[in-house]
Length: 311
Image: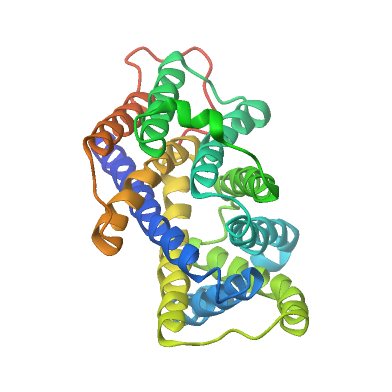
């Protein structure tokens, strides 16, 4: 039983790592599309593709669990509105008016918000080890995005996009906690498809408004391939993996894995954008993964306070 539990958590960590790696590719693709696709349209087509791809796999679950879904429609609607409709759309808005270094810095706050909110609402224990791990991870990421010169942080100026990104980080933290508390009588597939559909429905009126106000998407070969990537991988695949990881290891531990996002982004940028990986990158990667391991290691002595968020 203990071995099964250990393997169960290892799989949960692997799911979180895979989701984070896929999302790192999403940032690279999204940055390249901000000139050709308006933010709401990009979000709409992303989730449209995700629904179409996911439908054959989860339609049976959706029909079979219809009564449970209907009884939890308020919970599902709030979760879909936050995690599907608003979160990604805000990121696309943020990327149009702020710099990459600002986005990277602000995105670090997402796991911190998870830990804070989990502590406030669910009394999850904040250990010294977890605090040390967070500090090591933040140091590693700052080393990465400042290229070893922390004085670059003094030159940062905040734009409206920074505010959008900060709100997006808070929203995704709340979404992750909501997923952790998913009703047990709703399967991951039914939950995922229902929130994808609801999120798409909530996006639709804003999509129509954007099309009327601005312009239609120029569907070039590059644009289509990019939309397919963010729709199939960054939406369908990554969200399924992420939600499973939250259920298996909890939102705080999954959130710590998210700190590795700049590492994966750097690797993908090197492979697809010919950007060099320097010694700074290796040191930052070492710090990031060390911090993740330290913060997620279980203490040999069990704490007196038992968290109701432990899986």
